[in-house]
Structure formats: C-alpha cells, structure tokens
Amino acid sequence: MANRLLRNLSLRQLQIFAAVVRLGGVGKAAEELFVSQPTISIQLKTLAETLGEPIFEKVGRGLRPTPVGEDLYACCRSIFQSLDDLETAMSERHGLARGHLRLAVVSTAKYIAPELLGAFGERYPGIDLFLQVTNRDRILERMQAGEDDAYIMGEPPQEDSSIESIAFALNPIVVMAQANHPLLGRISIPLADLANEPFLFREPGSGTRKATMRVFEQEDFHPHVRMELGSNEAIKHAIIGHLGIAALSLHSLSLEGTQGPVRVLDVQGFPILRQWYLVYSKERPLSLATQAFLQFARQKEGEIGERLEQIWPTIKKSLAPGVEGSGT
Image 1 (cartoon, one colour):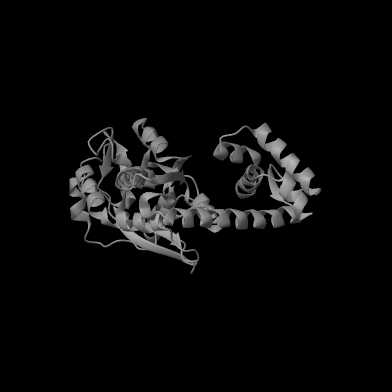
Image 2: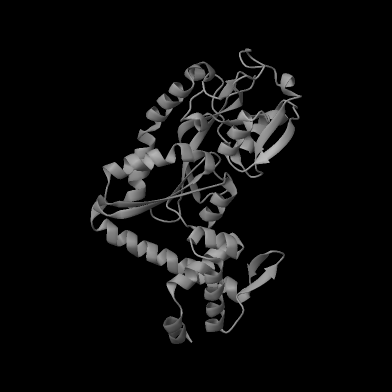
C-alpha cells in the first residue's frame, strides 16, 4: 500500500488537498494557489481514486474531510513540516546567505509589513521572502496549521501557551471622518455626540473592530452601524463618499496623511493606543532567517514611531493614557 501511494501521490496533490481542508472549499483554495477550480477538482478526484476512499463530504456549501481525509491531512502537515525543516537545515549550512522567511500579517499590518520586509531583504538579499495578508481569524488558522515562520498581529492568542508574542510598535486607532465633517476642529468630542453618526466597521473577526467595540462597551456607547466593509481602503472611500465615520488604525493614513480627504476627529477615549506584536511558535525551532527578522523588526520600532508622528504630529499628546496590551 505504501509503495503504491509513493508511486501515485504527488506533493502538488497534497498541497491542493491541504489548502481545501484549511479553507473549507475549492474556490478559496483556487484563489490562494492561483489555479482554476476545475484543476483543483480534478486533482482531488485523482487523489481520492488513488486512496480508494472518499476524502471529502459536502457540508452546506463547503467541504469537510472524511475520517480518511482527516488522516491524510495529518500526514500532509507532517510531510510539509519535515520538508520545511530540511530546507531550513540546508539553508543554515550557508548561514544567512540563503534561506526563506514566510510572514503572515493581519490586514492593517500591510501598511508596515512590506517596508519591513523590503528593508530586511536589502540587508539579506539571499533570503526568499513570502508575505500573506489576511484577517485575524485566518491568521489564527494559519498559525494552528504551522504554515508560516512568524506573524504580525495586534491581538496574539492569549490562551495559547505554545505561542510567543513580542510587542514592537504602536498601532493607534483613531476616529476618522470626511474633510468637511461638521465635528472636525472640535476638541475632546464626547462619545455621546457621535450617537447619531453612521459608523462604518470592518467585518466581524477584525481586530480593529474588536478593540473599538471594547471601548464602546466600557463607555456604554451603542454606535449606529451603517455598513460593514472588508478592508480599510473600502472604509476610507466610504468615508470620502459621506457614508459615515469609522475607527481605523492611524497607519491606514500612511500614504495620504491626515490633511487629505480623510481626517482625524478628536474624540474622547481615542486614540486607542494599541501595539503590534511579532508572534511565533515556541514548539518549533526558529530558523536563522526568522531570528534575524524578529531582531530586525524590533530595531525598526523607532522608525515606525517617527512615521506616526509625521502622519499625525499631535500623536505625542495622546501617549499619556498608556498602551492597551491585549487588543488587536
């Protein structure tokens, strides 16, 4: 049986199968792997025929692995981990002249992660870099599956003792409105004055949304949610379109600054002074490339802070309340 499987299975089939399991469907797997849905369906059919057993069952619009599929998925994870360890060992024979770094970050971290990786790549040109940007819930799934070397997020999983997290940079959340909003220019606006304002929120599962709602709940403030959108850029465009106001990371204004079509309101309780965290697993040895990146990112904290001051010079006045240590 083992010899037959070795002759007929391919790593590409296993990669496709594992992606469908993680993502719960063919469509999402096709998008992640940059292949067509019919290609994935054909590979899954061939894989099931090779095993002689069904590997998926339909659940609503998604797919769930059968018991055989669950055994196969555990085998896939073991194989991929072994290959990753082999690649790491081979790379470390050459020090940091070779290697790879797989980094996954929450959506808002896309405003800092590419520059970090770019600068890191300039210092270590022999290291292959991979970046995945997605929402917090998907990051947790990737972390559980051990798909990446390190992560940047705002709310590391507190209950998981196998995860190490290091705070390394500020991630302030501010209230934003269009440039001609009637509240613009007012100082220390009470939350109660926003009761009739339509709010724009990220999708459920967003770390920014969770942090904002915690503050609102503490103040017994119930926002009028007009719309949920899947990205910060979509929310900023909705703000410009006079569809409402929103609480977003100040980093999301890194390109246009705070004097463009989207402005920052001075609202009591804001900014929410949160932090970015570098996150990695304690259960697997860190490659030399990962260790170097973690150290490099922490050294860049000062530059990230300076950029925030350039975006919003008054941010220094807001540092007194302290940083929230358990948010996203």
